[in-house]
Length: 365
Image (cartoon, rainbow, N blue to C red; front, side, top):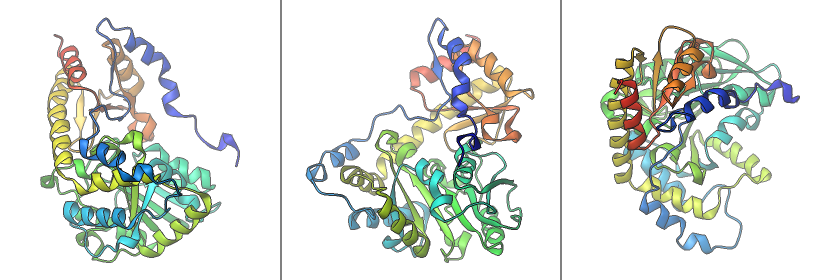
């Protein structure tokens, strides 16, 4: 595979507007990348530094039984997933590496198609290109074209914050199954969606009919537990698919360290810190959204997740430039596909002090 087969890394293009925003007298408000800024929960820190930190041998690629059981229990408790065997759980080194390598791990290559949402996290497309497959943008529930072997779903969405309810997810699953494609559902933001929004896992019986065949759910602790630095995530679902992924990952040495496995188990077992984090982001969303709208941008979707999806009905780079003049750095919507060319993505991942600074600037105070 040639290096030129991959697009340029999008964030490298923000150097100019970053410098402009950083020159603001009151400093930079970086709302471009969704990296957590709040403290790692004590229950997770304690687990990381616990007995697992003293184990000198190699960790199991499949993770400890305690970890797999904690994950399966959390999916049932938090999201109503039923019938998930803990053996069908596999820890991963963050979720991005799994997203990027999943087409390759599934054996996709030239002539195969990977379906991705019309507006989507760029790594879905990059993963297809790494494997030599062809990425194709799909509308919700659209019938995948011939040759499709993998379809990505993402709810709540990055970048739009849009939530797909059980009926919408079920339509996409049924369309993918009819095409003979595996469905991979990126659910990294699922715990950040209030139940009233109707967000569900692809493994929920209302979506899959209780049959996990051909389905994979990808979860990360980066957003809900502030563990981006830990690289703590997992994939769960179809036991046959998970077993196949496990076999390759064992050969490749793609192993989550013991202490991180312990931290991941602690994070999935504790719901209190998740509820606190959700409340914190919801409060930031409310304050920032009002200010963004007062500034004159229209906010679309954005009901869940970590972002506001905003537009001034003109090219996204122009909007990003205007915000940079206020010292606010955001992500141009074109990073996420042509359909985002008039939007910007505004992250909620900044301290309350920086969020308040952005609110003040956007409000003209």
